[in-house]
Structures are given as C-alpha cells and as structure tokens.
Image (cartoon, rainbow over all chains, first blue to last red):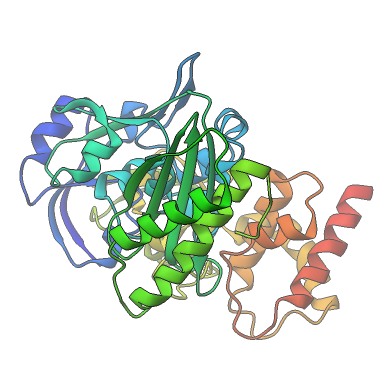
Length: 264
Length: 152
C-alpha cells in the first residue's frame, strides 16, 4: 500500500501538469495498480473535478476522457455498436464490474501496462492520444515513446469504418491475460496487435489482397509470429504464447471475414 | 484533510489522513459488514455502492468520495434480508464472510440489468469470490429472487 502526504483536487490541467513534474507526485486514476505498490507519494493529484469522464461522439470520432472508466466504455452504446462490441469484449474479463467501475482508461493507456486488454484493442484502431504538453499524436507513436510526466487528457478514435475483433486467453476467467490479440481490417490493410507477451502491446501492419485466401493468411500469421518476441513468465512460456497467437489471430481474422463467433 | 460524505444517507464529517482507505473508514464508523478479503481488488468482499454503483472500498480513498453517497448493506436492510432468504433457501449460505459484498453486487445488478440471462448474471457477478461453495446455490437463489421481483 502507498502513503500520501498531501491530496490536491486540481482545478486545471495546467495545475495538474505543474504538480506532476515532481517525481514524488502522482496522478491518481483508478489507483488499482498504484495501490499494489509501496510508493511514498508526496502530492496525490486528483483530476476528478476536470470533467474528463465523458465519452463524446461526433460525426468523425469518439473522444474518451482519460477519467472514463472501463465500465463506461463497456456499456457505451455508440462505441460498441460502431465497433461491433469490440470494447465490451475487450474489457469484460477484467476482474469484475466493481473493478471496472473504478479503473480508468487513461490510467491503463498512460501506463502502457503490458497486461492491458484495452491498449491492445485501441492500438488496432485509428486512434490518437491527446497529451497536455505533447499535443495530439497517434497511439502507436505514444506507445513507442518513453514514459514522461505529461498528462494524457483523452483518447480519440476515428470513425473510419474498419472492422475489428478482439480475443484474449487467460488461465482462468477474470485473471490477467496470458496473451491478448486485436485485429482490424480496412480495405487491403490488416492491423494485428499482440499484447500481454508480457511486454506492452505491439502493432504489426500488413497489406493483403482484397479477398485474402488461406495461403495469404497463413503466411501473414507466420510472418507476425516470427517477427514478434514472446516472453516467458510464470503465466506461460514463449512457445505456448506462439501457439496461442496463431489461434487468436486466426479467430479474429475469421470473425472479421465471416462474422464467425468464437468463445473469447 | 476535511471530508464530508453520506453513509446510508447519514452525514459524516471528519478530518482524516489523505491515504485513508474507504474500507477502513467505513469500518471505523461501525459498518462492520464491509469485509477485507483479498486487498488486491479481486474478491469483491468489500463491495459498497458509490452513488448507486458497485465499487471496491478496499481500493478507494476516503477523500475521493467526499461529497458523495455511500451505501453499505446496513443501509439496505430490507432488500438484503429478502434476498438473504432466497440464499438460505438454496443452502447457499455457508461461512457467510463473502455475503455482504455479494449481496451488494446482486442488488446493484438488479437495478442495472433488465431481465438478465444466466450468462449475464454470471458475468455481472464474476468479481465476487466465494471459497465455500461452487456458486450453483447462489445462482439458483438469484434466478428465483429475480423471478419473484419480475412478477411483483
């Protein structure tokens, strides 16, 4: 458990940013992972008064405030009908409703948690993050950047009519994932994301024919598996994850191409 | 740090340390139904309602709920007793340690889901662990309870 000397509910992003420049200070999101550590926090920075817990839908995009919870995106009609249930599918196995009522999207994406289901599914989409100082950049760029003391304000997902599918493997339901996988397809482009390897999620992009045949798909999957490192930890070996990756990628492609339904 | 909150519609004002966990605060005020099970946000035993939504009090700072309403099972005596009867009828009540958190989740589910299927019930309650039973008795009791509520 952590300790907190001082607690400040900030009244502006500027104030939050300035406070966040000290290593001793920490932004409190859902604080579920933070609580598992033993950090001595100087000032805890609370963003709850900044109205960042909204999901706004426009003609072109969805804008998800960093303090929206995983449950907010799980039950959001607009998001889920646009992306064919992608969001509810990618968070439903995260512990329970109570936890998802607390865990924030911003906390998960900002920290680039290796086990993050939501980072995996977002990376497969045309997705941006809005940083207070760093401006709006693609999520892919953000994932590759080193962590800094900026503030992740919102996540923006463009409505580009792509199809997407998600699946994960867990040793038991509600546990942390052994492997997560999201696939999306727009025209000839395929985006394959693998997470919980146990490193942060990684996006690989491929161009295939309009109507890929079994041969095309097979070679794409083996290419991805060959070029991706799958770590070994106590949840699973590298070899096991490679076998899982083959199955999960295939199921997601299958769902996109044929609307197949598989247990996720 | 000064906080003011409502627990079961009764106002509480206090000067507390900013790292006080809601679970400890509630227990210090005598709401002993709120249990610390795993302390890792996994078991659901510490479930209370924050503005009607189920949350884990073991993973919430008390200062975060300042100005807001918390409900524990002590505040839902009638509903809890009614559902508790269904639990007992199915023999699902064993050591009882997980019951308060579990009942809070069931009552939250009743308010949130309309006519849930068995699968939806299981999914909603996945965050509540019970180490005595195999969950079958609980599931039977929930279905019977919801049937009665639907007819009422």
